[in-house]
Image (cartoon, rainbow, N blue to C red):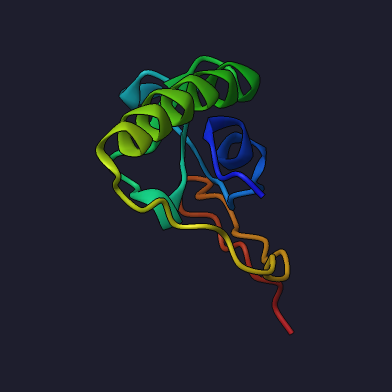
Length: 97
């Protein structure tokens, strides 16, 4: 299999999604931890917009990495989904038991 741009674009990387507070401008910040949270990151007013921008970021970075011969990490098997509670202004998010 040829590992070209389209190959890397087709891989399913785990994406971290962080809703931004109104104080931070609102919207969403998305990133790919495996590839570098500070490098493979994007923001948008909606989750869909942030994810679309992240696809452009991936394409640009993958293209450059391939040009320079920089190895691109590939995702392993997907981990189980672990829900992360959102901060709700100090509300206790765990049920009393």
